[in-house]
Image (spheres, rainbow, N blue to C red):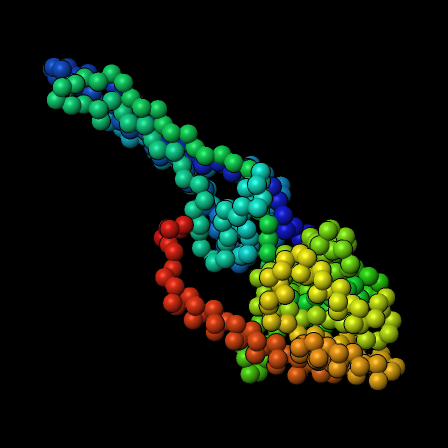
Length: 353
């Protein structure tokens, strides 16, 4: 299945049906009076968080999404039928933005439930509803309200607990395949990961958590170089970051230089990413030739306040201690979030039962 994480679509709520102007005409009924019915309401547009959707691929081929229009009212006080509501299933983590002003976030789909996005137009009133003691035979009705139409940009931000960040060939794919059942592509050339990969990690002491492997970041990623700019948004919702540094001696840059580049790119893309808890994993430990150089890198990172772990995903070395550390931070982050949500009353204004 192709991974699509950004699409532009047109959404339109239904227009309300027109009211009706009619009069009662029956034999032996004098002065029957008005009996034009009201028009039906236009359909609403909902976005629905759906666990069964992993990408926005379906919407890439269904760009126009329209709710049903309400039907016009009829004589004999017949109410027009309401338009059919439109439910658009999207993956959890989808952000809805105005296409013209993509800085403005209109809606975030974070839970598996419907979110009402556009309300359908009201149906027009028939002439029967305008009858008064002074005007017993109104000969007019209301038209239905138009629906709302707009172009929106949907962007998917994966909802993972731990985001893996590193240069191409830092060992991210090997790590996620070693600690979960994810099966990313692994090869000895850069950018083997072209789309984000998710893996569920189970640890004996804590609840399972989700790791996201995004394509490798290179210098200038925040400006669109490489693939990092497109996928950096997938780590915005993570509870923490795990920076991977290749210490095998075969990477393009020295480990500490890569570390500075990664920190710089994260800060330039979104400064709040640097406020997240993070750890550093020194990877490919099975391929090192100079132990003293690794120790020097480890000491420099620890002096900078980083939690550092030496690992070899191939040999399984150091993975248990790393996973215990990650699971503990995720557990604490979940606890803090639940405590915060318990203190803040939920806002039900954007959805209905």
